[in-house]
Amino acid sequence: MKEQGRKVIAQNRRARHDYAILEELEAGVALKGTEVKSLRLGRASLVDAFATIDDGEIFLRNLHIPEYVRGSWTNHEPRRTRKLLLHRGEIDRLMGKTREGGLTLVPLSLYFNDGKVKCELALAKGKKDYDKRQDLAKKDAQREMARAVGRAAKGRARSLR
Image 1 (cartoon, rainbow, N blue to C red):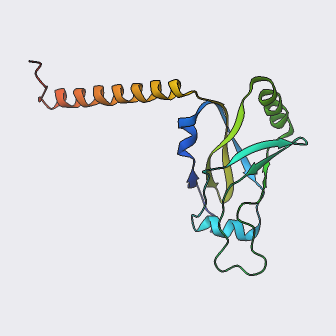
Image 2 (image 1 turned 90 degrees about the vertical axis):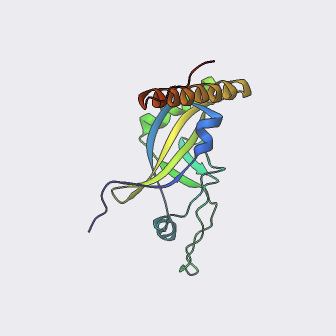
Image 3 (image 1 turned 60 degrees about the vertical axis):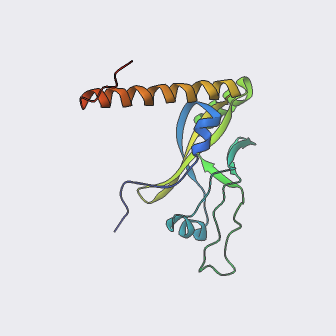
């Protein structure tokens, strides 16, 4: 029976903290058989992964897919460079944007979509330290407001003395 839906294998949570995400897109990943088997076991790491554009093609570098346990001499290299599959127009558009504005391509997640391995790729701009601090302050303020609303809804509003 064919696999249906979306099953997340790995996520790069650090990317949303370190980069301002401008645009997201889905790309296929060219893999070997033992890599897919290892991914089906839910084993992968996007921690140091990044994408580059070389000779009009996009490659995913430093994606760690551990060797398949039951593999033989046909096993793959864990951190090999893997090609991302995108339409020519998308590649050309991304090439232009990364050259002109100092933007970078960051993988956000790796998942199965109807049985095929896909990579969620983001066009991103690096955040400065003060941007990160502002984001954390906003998140804390929103969390505190949500708590206050929750307390008020339960009738336990904190009195100000």
